[in-house]
Image 1: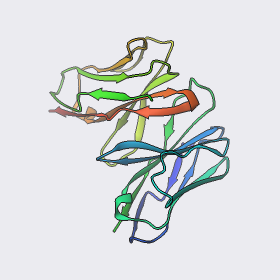
Image 2: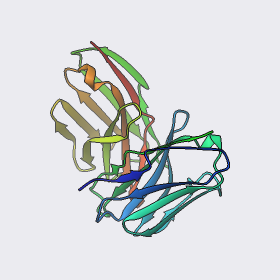
Image 3: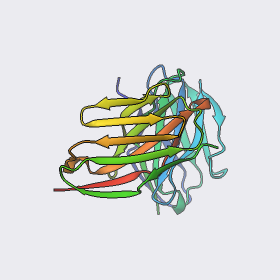
Image 4: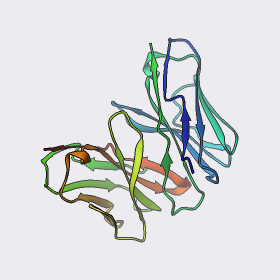
Length: 114
Length: 111
């Protein structure tokens, strides 16, 4: 298996622009998670899906952030409009429904908003 | 609400010394605990996964223990090498399959 695949690896955009981050989970994994990592706040859970349905989006910082999972093999995290304080590394992770499995993380997308 | 703490936040040791990294969590109702390694600018690599019913897990020079009742886990790295320099994160998985992370321990192994 190729693991969790995220794209792009790096994104530099201007303030006010729309940014879309993409994630392909491991096939067969029922849960998908979006995390954000910054030096100040560490790893924060933004939102997670179970069988393509959003379960908990309480970590999404503002209405500017939205996430979708149209099917079991694809998810997007969108920021519109982007702001400099959104600069961070965004990770996607997936795990099977069984409790005894661990998480697998993607390589992350480093977002810089200038 | 589950809280995970890692102490110390940073650690510097000479090459060859054993490393001891600590992780504590407030709610013992967990499914498992996972230790990750993160190199600068990179993603998270899973090192060890300990189920809630297990006491320890070993992989090469790495050994992780779990005391669920006291809410503690320890990661031991034997005979440290400069290549072990990285940030180590522990995370607990609980109800809803949610993972809660500690703040990490940044390790520097000096040659």
